[in-house]
Every structure is written in structure tokens, then in C-alpha cells.
Amino acid sequence: MLGKFFDKILHDEEELAYELKEEEKPRPRKFSKKDIIIGLLIFISALALRLLFLFFVANPQNAGDGWYGDVYHHWQIGFLTKEIGLSHSFLRLWDLKGMEYFWGPFHPLLLTLLFALTGSISIVIPRILSIAFGGLLLVLVYFVATKYWNRWVGMGAAFLGIVNPVAIFNDTSGMLEPIGYAFLLAGVLLVESAPLAAGFIWAISTLVRAESWLFSVFLIFVVIITRMLKRSGDAAKLILGFAIPMLLYMKYLLDHTGNAIYPFWWNYLANAKGVWAEGIYRPLSAYQLSVRPYLLVWGAISLALLLFTLWKKPKGGLMLSFGFVVWAFLGGFFGATHYLTGFETWFWYIRFFVFPYIFLGLLVSLFFFYIIPKVNRHLSHMVAYLGLALPILIIGVLIQLVWNPILSEYHKTDWVWERTLSWGKETGEFYKGGKVLIPEGYPSYTYSLAYYGHVQGKDILGQMFDPFYYMKPGYFDDWEKNRKVVLGWIKKEDIRLLVADTTVLHVGPTAIDNRRYLTLIQKEPQLFTKVGILGSGPGSTQEILGIYDVHPELIHLDED
Image (cartoon, rainbow, N blue to C red; front, side):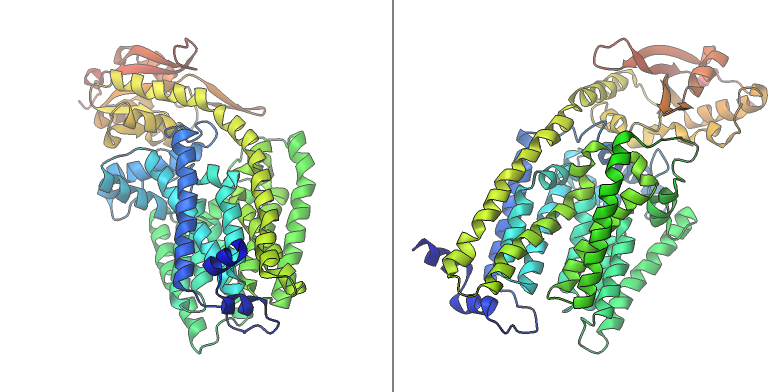
């Protein structure tokens, strides 16, 4: 009775026969209203679990401060683009660290739009945006699996993605990966029926994440060499749909950065050689040395599976090739390049591995709901589907154990966020107008300063924009010469509050001294009045940042 009920809801008899019959049709199956309903249920389920985690388990304002710092950095670029960048020129992004074009313009411009529409600059907005795309990604997994295999494969894969703790945590973080992968999968779904649109969507994915430069070109390559497109002119449509927006994007990057492949260059080509960390010595830790062989083996096996898939051209080969190339890329890139110096024990449950886990769930579902029924065609509907759903359910329960290390790492950031929260509020209390000059390396502090300290983006200035940045080391040795430049800049910018870094950052044996403003204060004490400190924690007397009132009206230069 129960089997017939589910069979009626999830399959018509002719659909079940279609999926199990020995001679399959060469073309992918079409979607029905039932698929739309199931897709909607998948989206709602994913959304519900992730919103539940965001608002009732995690702190909605703490996106992993001190651990997931990039979340606040992405917010910062979106916020400052809205407040400052767009007033300078068309689609001009803005940042305090000069990294506004490092990832891509799609996310900051979308955040700019959402901030304008909602009237809020809360970090909750990018976190909900990530949740929405995370749910959409699972819907697309369902549709791709249903298109090439069957509905049960899609539902099994989506279910494992819905309940996956790594996916839930990262979708609620506010990072970009769900957006980039959703665009890539949308192209996989549409490429045969709408190649022009697929090419365009894959081009848009490159505006989200730098790895999409590689994956989108790879997908086009696979489509062409496997001759997926049967209609005359479809290959040209795919290439044009991709090439035209890509050329426009590259011209945009060239105009703003001087490098037409800027995000791809810095994220991968330069970072693989260690250019980003040039001058900073980072020896490999014992853990990094121990994990390297596993990463390389994973990458090699994935590459072998990719080549086998390209050779055999199985049903759904484009999706399988995509999953295997992601695996091969991550295993090889982390294991064989300078990126290994940043590999931590907790990397296995952060954003880099969300799609690999979702793809693994697809393979598991494919095994139980497609391969097993195809091998044994005498299984009844109940056994073949409801019975084989049991292992999927068991896996879904067992992976909940991953919550322990995830939440343990996340809650280590609670005190960091409390400190950042107090920093923003305290600085806001000292702000009386003009501009605030802050160290550029604290994007979560920028968020707290704007959201809780109520300082507008146009009045927040990063110290990377100061004249020191363009001077040779030893600028205080010839202070009479450099004094006019530095103090003239402070006066011109109407800087009224200074937040000075008092710390030296140690990376291995390398020390990075950010205390130039303390030296400036010693040189020109009449221009600064210390009004407060920002400590290592709420109420702490251990000073990390010092707050100074600045008196630009007392600056007198020869030309005044």
C-alpha cells in the first residue's frame, strides 16, 4: 500500500518502465509538472534547514569572524562599491585593501543592488543570498540527474545535499561558491536545448569565482569533443554566447586593473607560484606534509576517472566530467602548489569542498537508484526504490556527526566577533565627523564600524590609500621632505579620527610591522590626541588598536 502510494506520487507506471527498461532512448528525458513540484520542495527544504541554522544555531551577525574573514571582505567590497565606487565611474568597484577585482564583479554589484533595495547593509543579506543560491544549486542537481538518469537519482542526490552539514554551514556563511556553481550547473542543464544561453551563463559564472574561468572553458571543450550538440550551428552559438560577454569582461578588467585575466591570474597562476605571499616565508607544517600525498592521490584518481569518462562518454557524461575535473583540480592544486602552505586541518569542511561533497552524494545516489536497478531488473518497485532509499537515509543520518568539528571551530570565533562588535561601537562613539582612517586588514571591523558605529562608507578610509604606500622604506628618515606629502594628504582628506595599529604581524619568521602611524604620532604629537584603545577583547586593557582624535586644522605647511 505504502509502496503504491509513493509510486503514484513519484512515478507513473510508464515513467518507471522507461527508467528500468533495457533499451534506453538516446535522448535525455523531459521534465513534467511533477519535476517542478519536486524541485520546489527541494528548494524549500534546503532553505528551511539553512535558515534554521542561521537564526537559531549560529549568530546571524557572526559569519565566522577570524575564521571566515572573507565573508566580511566580500561585504566590504559590496558596501564600499555602493557608497564610493559607483560615484567614481561606471561599475567601479571599491575596497580598502585593493582587492575589489580579485574575485569578480557579480557578487559586489548584486550586493550593492540588494543594499539599495532593502535599505539595510546587514551581513545577513549576503548570507541569505548565499542560502538562496545554495538551495538553487541542489534544485539544479536534481534536474540534471533527472534529465540524464532518473528522478530517484536526483532526489537522492538533492537529499544528501540538503542535510549535508558542510553544505548547510557554508551556504549560510555568505560566501560565493554556491552562486558560481549554480551558474555552472545551469549551463550544464541548458547546453543541449539552449547552447547560446548556456554559453552566456558560463561566462557570467566567471564574474563570480575565478575557478569558473577554468571550469567554463573545460565544459565547452567537453561539449564539443563529445559532440553533444546535434543541431547545425549549435556549437557556434555556444562559443559566441560565451566569447562575447567574456571579451567585454576582459576589456572591463583591462581598463580597471591593466590585466585582462586579473582574477584568474592572482587566484591561481600567481598564487600557485607563491607570488601572493612573496617575501613571507611559510614552511609546510607537519600536517600539510602528511596530507599532501592524500591530496595528490585524490587528484590523480579523479583525473583518471575524468579521462575514462571522456573516453567512454556515458549517459550524463558532461555532469560526471564536471564533477571529476573539480575533484582533480582541488586535489592537484592543493597538493602540488604553493596553496598547500595555507591548508589547515579544518579545510575539509569549508567552502572548497561543498560541491565535491554534493557531487559525491550524486555518485552515491546514482549507484543505488540507477546502477543497482539496471543490474538487477527483477527488483520490484518497492525494493528498487523505497528499499534502496534506506542506505541514503542512513548516510544522511551518519554525516550529521560532522557537525561536531564544524560547530567546535565556529564557536571559537564567538569571542572574536564580540571583540569586533565592541570595536565598532566604541569607535563610533568617538566619531564626530570628517573621515576615519583605519588599518585596511580588518574587514569585519569595517562592518562593525558601519553597522553598529553608524559611520558612513564615504567617511571610512583605509590606510592602504595613504602616501606611505607609495614611498620607499625609511620615509621617516627624510621626514622634512615627506612631511608635506603625508600631512597635506591628512588635511586634504579631512581625517578627524585615526585608528592606529600597535601590533607586529608574525608569519613564521617573517615580521610585518604596521606601526607607521605610531611613529607619525611621535613625530607630530601636536596633531593627535589619544582618546581610547581597542583591546584584545571586550573590557581588555591589552591594546591592539589605538584611537586618536586628529586635528587637521593645526597642520601648517609652507604653502599655506
